[in-house]
Amino acid sequence: MVPSKWLVWLKPGHAFQVAIDETGKIYPVKMVRIGARIDPISQSVKVTGAIGGHFPELFAGMSGKVLLSPPG
Image 1 (cartoon, rainbow, N blue to C red):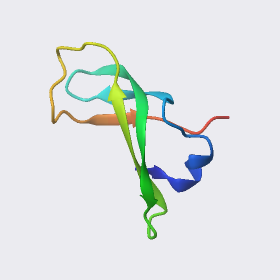
Image 2 (image 1 turned 90 degrees about the vertical axis):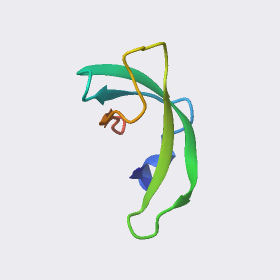
Image 3 (image 1 turned 90 degrees about the horizontal axis):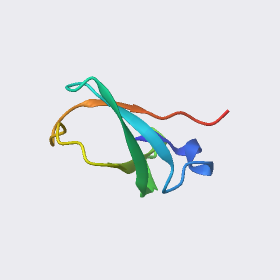
Image 4 (image 1 turned 120 degrees about the vertical axis):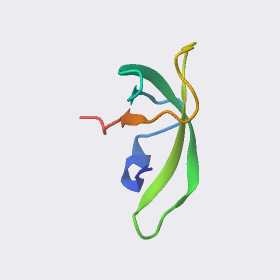
């Protein structure tokens, strides 16, 4: 979930990173989809990214933190 005001600069294909708790490593991610609805209460929108590359140490259900912030 990201603030809806980020939609002016955040587009599919945008590169960012994710830090995975279980591995202690940072991985490259590309935005693949932006949700069609803005939550009226939180003013946020759901986004989906995909980790690029082959990382056999990653498993479904791992947790971490998205490293994404507005430009400038």
